[in-house]
Image (cartoon, rainbow, N blue to C red; front, side, top):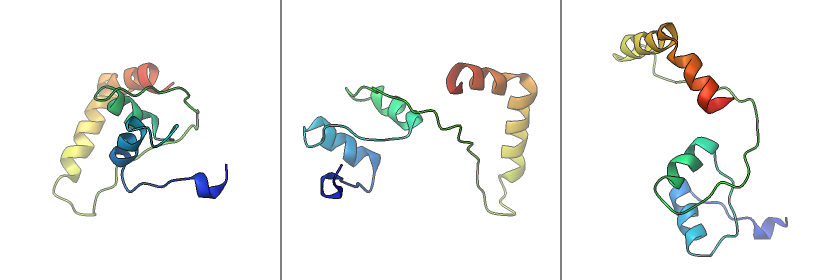
Amino acid sequence: MPEDNLKRYPTNLEAITDLQNGNLDCMIIDAWAAQGYASLRPIKTILTIETNENYGIAMPKGCKMNAQISKALQDIINSGEMISIVQNHIK
């Protein structure tokens, strides 16, 4: 695609609005974001590309919530919920 045909948007919502208004033929967006928007707007995911990406949570060092978030994540892992999330939503 010629770069002149490529549009960049500051937010996903602006791109989705242009898609709905007929100003775009398609867009590339993170799969999780696409699923979320599809539950709110009449858009359809037509292709998902597996990238084997890993995600993390970034917090400032010494943040008051670090211990709470770490405990919550450990609880999710210990309960088996993390395995369920990966099996049902990521793989």
